[in-house]
Length: 218
Image 1 (spheres, rainbow, N blue to C red):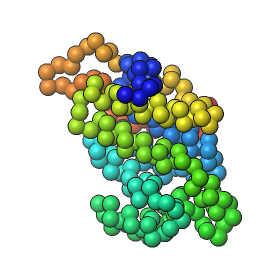
Image 2: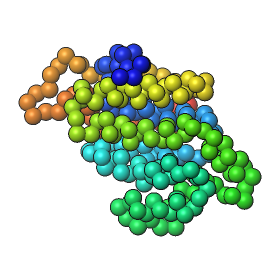
Image 3: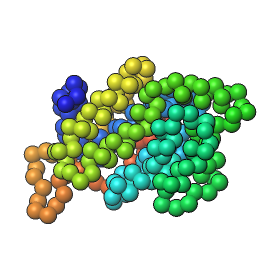
Image 4: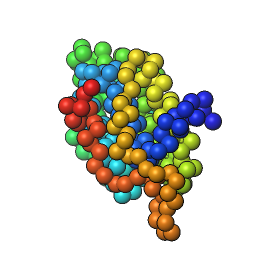
């Protein structure tokens, strides 16, 4: 078990998994906007925050990978267009030229533009960038096909790891008061044939986004 597990678990013990996922999104947004404020991260934010409004989280995960595919996350050189175009292999539909343009603009930029070249050089040296983008998929792996209580340890480790990355770069953590909306009573057992209240409810949580809702900037 990770070192920070107990502290994080205690802090989030009355927060639903939906709330914990939202906290992960909030941390990710602060990392992206704090480290790379000159980029438009709206496509990533839109694909993150749609997660909580979907009935099935595995479907949400699939939609997330449509804009943040693992072939982009794991590639050795984000400027290799032929690898970016291979995302069609992982999609449920054939990607079109607009998909390629959006991905290359976000992760690669214009190779003829000095600012984009500088961004790519900086990104390739950032060992945390890919790890941060992987967090939603790792959350899905921890939560899918298990119980609320069995999912808690792994999710706590993810939150602790993400907070450590923010603190390393002196980026402020999200305000925990936003989590009050997701509080639940752990002592209240789920009724027969009802889901554990610890999972939370399906809802639109975009109001928490500092990218989609710039007025939320602290």
